[in-house]
Length: 403
Image (cartoon, rainbow, N blue to C red; front, top):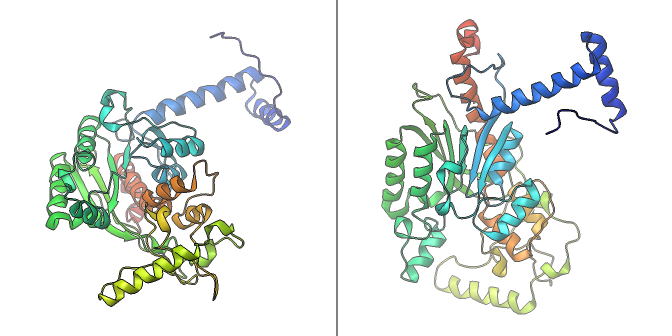
């Protein structure tokens, strides 16, 4: 690279700031620009060095909800983890997602094309990182997924060759890279699947890898107008955290809960209204099951309340979440934009078909819940870094970490 650089069309406010720096520090214009570049390089190098590498890190004396850290995004989907962790100061160093349509959305939203099949990755190609985030495949463990596979005589859980054993691929990466923090998500049914044996195997493997393990089922209804229970698993490397950290999952926000009506479009496209044929079919189907004494059927929601869980199969008929449109008119599906809001994503351009968008949102993690849990993780990171610098010994009143 040529060591001589010429910068044209510098904005007036930047020129003014540089002049102020020159006068304040008695520097030439070149010295100011070079000092800025030096600091940028140092910050980049510092960020690439894991937080808990043994090198001292400077932290603020007050508990912060933002900390510069690095993470990787595995089984990334459309970036629910990334969307949240970047808001907390995280920098994504690597992502992986096999579905080509999700890759398309991920690239459009974050500017990166995720790596493909995780089973074909060279672990040496994965950069070092502070946090490993992964919503590993949940279909073999979900209630709907297990029921479907059993009815078809298919294997499920860890017996599912194509998906269930990807947890062990994840464990191989963890063992090789040793991130200080694991941040995992799966369906609620993970803990009860196969009479708890699946969860026991996962816990035992994480324990073998020498991590402190914290888990909790959290309903996203406190953050978005949707009943969506998922198990969140947060683990801390015992080498980086010899003392068990005082980690606590976030409490559900108080006050008025989000309502479905707050995320609905005022004038949705008529194409999302069910046809009379489909609406009549769903009503007959529900009536037939009611006569048998079970609860299968459509979900006509109260706009002033919350919805059922949005699933990846919503594109088929939308029956789990139907929006009423008044007497004498068939209900309608949610629009993709409404699904964006229902899941708590920032509104960005949808670059795939409605079918793929429904699948992507139905498989996604809720960013607002990830962010809430992430804030608690950052408090522990801060707690540990502050311990290393003996800041808490000088300010004992600030040792306690609030929930």
